[in-house]
Image (cartoon, rainbow, N blue to C red; front, side, top):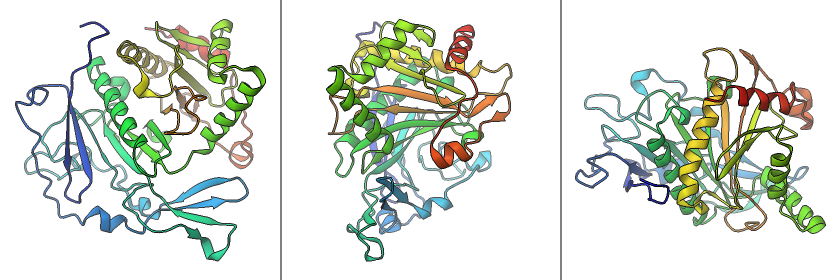
Length: 381
């Protein structure tokens, strides 16, 4: 198979007991060919999601910053580090714990989060908190999904083989396209949290996708900076940053035919890397077949280096998020890139976001980007 051959997988959509959507992305037989159907039934006695989520989450406007803040009190009851035999993301085996996935095995699945921060099932009207026009409120519309990378109960994206990693990538692409076209969604964010230090509540290898009903503060800032840069120079800020990093070279971690990974010159976190396509691309769906194949190898390479960054056997905790162009606004100015970072400033040493970072958003890094990049080049496979 060459890089121009589309990756084969079969997509099957079904419904859970409470009406939430679940989608299988199969890359193995007998499901890939359709010889066997995904017809397992979720028999859990769940109330309809339309009822449990109605009137739930709300977003409130902060007049001091211009940010929308989600209030989602029901998320405080979500599952927290269950015993292995009650993993809600595992397949449902006969006689076993009934999980979110009714079938007894699966390759990759995506489904509506049972405890979403945003959902179009919430309903309600716009208004003002306490009748004060200072505090506009809106239903927290949108959608939150979980993406299970594997039926294995332990691991992460970095432990997948290239074929399965490509299927996960195709699931991200499919969901980005779908959510971008969903009413109320302004921006799609694909991300993975790994490690208890990050705050992970389920060890099962999985990620999440948020379809926000607004542009996030970080995206708004980047778009504003990109527009100011274009007005001043005529250039694309994201492209110019990538070109400058490649010219400098001291912070470049790896380069492939289609992607470059580098530690940003003004990195905030103790370990932080950006992975960007060499071509101007707004989002994951815009990647070509060649770029998708190349991305899988580059990303797995990068995650392997991150796990070898510190001289111990503890996998590096991280947050990995895909910054994509919003659904409608700023698509010409924005440029796809991955940001992956860790809170560990040394083996077993967590960087806590204390006074300066948390209260004032004034960051202090405990190392230099050049040292981080040099170490990541040193631990290349």
